[in-house]
Each structure stands twice: as C-alpha cells, then as structure tokens.
Length: 152
Image 1: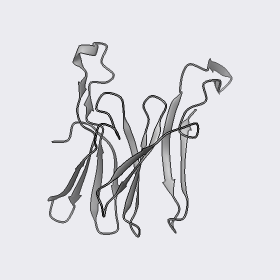
Image 2: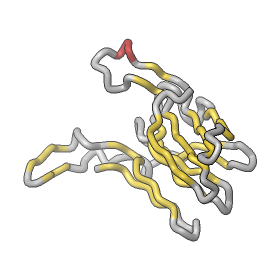
Image 3: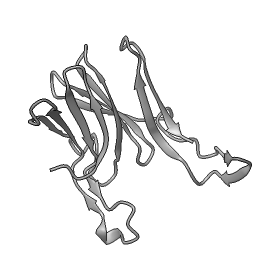
C-alpha cells in the first residue's frame, strides 16, 4: 500500500493521482527508523474507489534511498505526468502514460542556490536553511509551458 502520500491531483475524469514517496519516518531523530521504499504513482477512480493504475519508478529514475517525489502535474492531452524530486540536487521526472517510460532530468535549473540567504520579517536565516531544490511545479492550461522552482 501507500507509504507516504506527498501530493495528490484530481483530473477531469475524476481520477485521483497520488504521489507516494515510498519513504517513512524521514524526520525521525533515529536514522534506523527510516524506511526507504519504492517511489510509486497510484491512480484511483473516485467514483468507484478502485485502484486503476500503479507505476513503480525504477531506481535509476527515483531512488528509494535518494529521492523524494514531491509534487505532480498532469498533461491530460499528451498523457504525460510531471513530478519534482526535492531530494539532493533535485530533479524533474516525466512519466509517459502511453508507453510507461519514465525519465529523470537534473541540472542547474533543478538545484537550489546554495548562496541564497533567507530573510523573513527582518530575521536573517542564512543560506543553510530552507534550501529545497525543485519543489513547486505547474503546467499552463494549454499544456505548452511547464514551470518549476526551488523553495528558497
């Protein structure tokens, strides 16, 4: 079953797309409590409650111990799901829903900026906090542009 649902999306067909990081107890003070499972996409028909699709990401796309699938957007016309991986240097992950092929893209655009200094309400938190790489993701209504960002 689902280990840790990080994000969910309901499409125009009333299907719920649930992003399972596969990881549990990640914030535990005891590393031995961490559970690294396979990142998985679950799709449920909300009208019937039936699980209609399961996709387990291969380790080279989303590693059970070195990834954290964070968010999803769905291109319903071209049948592609886009995900952010908010672990390490970050990544964008695509899943072609027709072929079942997933891919990982990472580079300077998916990473956080280590020199970024966070100041909130006049308090300087420095550059070592709030440094999540690729986190937010959005797709335009016409499916022509994909936007993503780090949390900084």
